[in-house]
Amino acid sequence: MTNQQTTERDQLLVELRELIADREREGIRGLAERMGPAEWADLIPQLDRDEIATLVDWLPDAQIPDLLTELEPEQAADILRTLAHGDAADVLEEMPPDVAADIVGELEAHEAAPILIQMRPAEAAELRDLLAYPPDTAGGMMTPAFVAVRADAQASDVVAALRRASETAETFSYIYVVDDARRLVGVLSLRNLVLTRPDTPVRELMALETIRVRADIDREAAARLVTDYNFLALPVVDADDRLLGIITQDDVADVLEQEATEDIERLGGQQPLDVPYRLASVALLFRRRIGWLLLLFVASAYTGTVMRAFEQQLQAAIALSLFIPLLIGTGGNIGSQTVTLVVRAMGLGELRLRDIGWVLWKELRVGLAMGAVLALVAFGRADLPLIGLAVGPDVALVVAISIFAISIWAITVAAVLPLVLRRLGVDPAVVSAPLITTVVDGTGLVIYFEIARLVLGL
Image 1 (cartoon, rainbow, N blue to C red):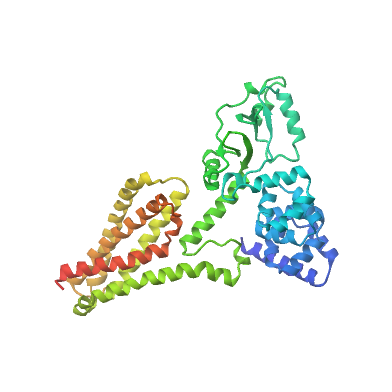
Image 2: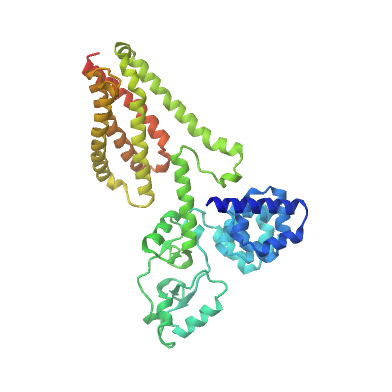
């Protein structure tokens, strides 16, 4: 967001709060005439609960479904709780079913039940079907708003079906072809449909090879298929190949953003937040961070143990202690860089466990090159007068060799560990940069002191 956009948003927020405080209902209505759902969604997280309740009560009813669609499900569910059951049902009926299901999924069972009862039976059943799938699966992100026809239909029949579904279908880019048991047998593009004669049978127009996903696969894997093949939509089927719904590009964008956010939070050494940062309480931020910090704190303690074990070497050559921050900092930085690249490549589906040898060989070559450069710089830093510490060529040689060895060691650990953890069923994103840094710090000191003992004869 640019500075100008931030300023405009802040001005709107001030104006909105003043209107609510002054009970200017007509002023809110006037504001609604020049603001869209996305703008409201940007402001609402910055209001308190009473202000939100007042705003929702005063906004035109027709704007509420679009507003809730733009919000995070947790925020939308909070607003839904402020509405009467009948009003909440009306709002959900006007929303895309997959979005409505996400919102209802944030409610407790006793909160959702009376709202679903107030909805039209067919739409309530649709939401219940969607809620049966875990939110992290393809079924949990699909929408049942698609167009399906039979293979024996004619092009004119499909056009008529599109007209009937014009207000409910999520997309017309693809028309899916099913048999009598609703099994997916093909797909028809809108382009082929409009360029053919009205009496042409669908079976002559459809593509038989149709990529589809099972409803129970991980949602990130389904999202990657959409992006890898540049699909506008991806069909979702059950174990019997019956068509259940579709995943569209807007769903994919949301999922990939959420997954990327979780990975970044884990790489930063904390558990992912379940709510936007602005809505996260101090207690929630504390709970998400303290576990990792305690683990890293305990793990870091062995660095002191290592230094105590090599106390005699340190006393014999005090100059060695001058380079400890440089050595452990370098190892941690190299490990952080590598683990970030590897975890990202795994998230994009570029790396599997079978690639471990290829990854290791690739990163080792990078480590050798970086280690050589850093070793040369470290030697100069240690031995050269004026620009260096002038500790003597022997200590400088120890530092240079140690930097070289630690570089290779750090890059090896960071390249291999995420792939091994994935094989063990552990989310590789938990191999955060702080954890890699902690591991490399202690082991790097062991390498440093052992090299010092061999070179200096300590």
